[in-house]
Length: 388
Ligand code: GMT
Image 1 (tube, rainbow, N blue to C red):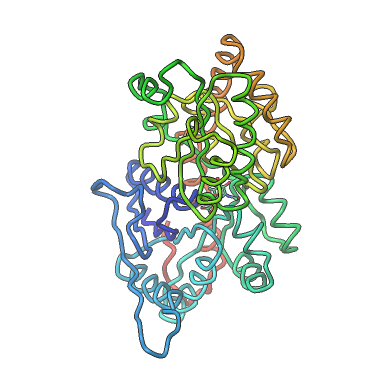
Image 2 (image 1 turned 180 degrees about the horizontal axis):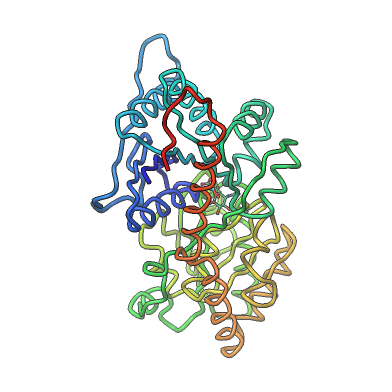
């Protein structure tokens, strides 16, 4: 199949999932065209089946903001026609689903039908999407997509509740590539971070408010009083400075390291004993899954789709959002006993295997086939395209 993938090219979970999906599909022989404003961060190496189309915006003194949506829609029309794409898969509803709808309509007027699959990732529904300034466009473009997927059952339910739409939404969980995310021996890192054999707790996020990084620090503060430990804070974002201030106020600077954005997070997860994700809202929690694949148990909130990933009492523990005491006690229960930690590590890996890319990729391929077959059967007769 020839598939166009539209996504945010940044470190965010939706862009990561879109890129890894494209890479996986390319390895299976599909021709993948990424269409976005920057080369996606995880798209570093050359691959014979992968193409990247840069969306250039046009500045003009009249524009206060360069109209990215217009440039993207024109680019989609161009790439679909020239590269003869079979399908567009857009990640994150805003603005990608609406732009794809526009491109689809333009293409129909030119005699080509290209089905659009939209994947909902979380904040496009839960936080930003339901805001009045976006809601009607989000609802409309979900309804007009030829196929819609959500990354968890919880996100699917939220979408129905917030938008009252009636299309079928297919849950296809996020996935993990074990070729990359596997526990490897990084003892030299461990010695540098925790020279006296301290436990290592880790948090990775974009440091937005909803990630509640302050809860991570408060949980660590409590754990650190009972168990010699270190905390790695990976990522960057709007709350970073506040978090540094909090560490200073609590006198924890010796034991907490801010590592900023990191490419090889699997190497840091390889030396971690526990992953902390106290988010206020989380459709899935890809970072938690990456930790589990590296045999790291997870202490998390029970928000959104997290209970579908982190199994309470098995792969880690779930607590109410904001319950830092509960989270700290759970963390201590795992970390204070070597045997218990080993058991949780094993369970975390077993659970992560359910989300192996090898199991999830065929679900996307089957869904594409289904959408294409349906589009072929229902598209206007005078419009060619949609060849199976
Ligand atoms: O978590 C973020 O703020 C980034 C965001 C994104 O869109 O890039 O992540 C969302 O999509 C990820 C991949 O599907 C999910 O694993 C995250 O749980 C989800 N974030 C939220 O729902 C807050």
